[in-house]
Image (tube, rainbow, N blue to C red):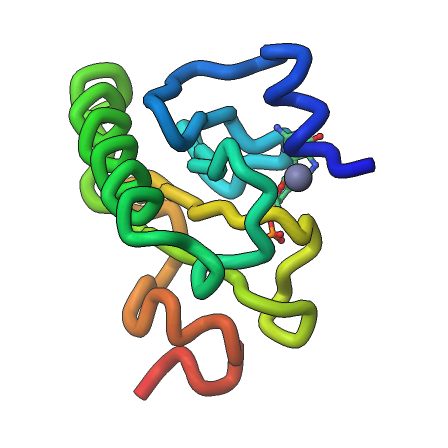
Length: 123
Ligand code: 5GP
Ligand code: ZN
């Protein structure tokens, strides 16, 4: 059983969808508006996606970004994908994190996604 396939099947919490992907708010958000863009097909990770799926992900990202800009007025965004357990992936169904960022949400944001290896974030 895959939790993302289950969510799609039940249409629970789906806030956006197009032909190939859907989006849900993350249950444990790291910021207001943290959202997951998920393929409708049970793909393993980003590298498993077809070109049309990647285009559908991009379409979703742009739509959600424009929506969150209007709703929450964030100051920036991180876009991130964990691929494989060693990178931090916990749900083995391809998804992209779109994370709105707000001035002052961390003391020093410098390095951003470099923080996947916390001691290497600052440089
Ligand atoms: P990963 O670690 O695989 O890149 O991301 C999985 C994400 O899914 C995590 O950020 C986690 O908070 C979120 N998540 C896990 N289970 C659920 C769930 O049942 N519902 C929702 N909406 N998000 C979930
Ligand atoms: Zn799945």
